[in-house]
Amino acid sequence: MRDQDDKTKFRAGFSVPADAPPAFFFVAHDDKNTTSSSGSALLFLEYKKLNLHAKLHIYAKGGHGSGLRKSGLPAAEWPVRVGEWLDSRGWLKE
Image (cartoon, rainbow, N blue to C red):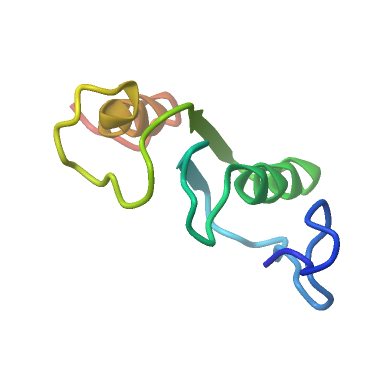
């Protein structure tokens, strides 16, 4: 997704389509994998430029692939945050 030489830009040919679906981005700053908090932030900003629905959470700790494991870290609460986001958009029914 990001340019190999300039991590502040997307690679050539990458773009977010105007009809992209709403997105919830969840990433940990200490994720040392190819996914990064800065890449997620870039993607979120592209959504905002296109006035698309998106939510971004960057947690200080959580590593890569934290998923649903109980770690005691704030990042483990991401399912609650996504539920709140879905509800705020009116996408959950009581």
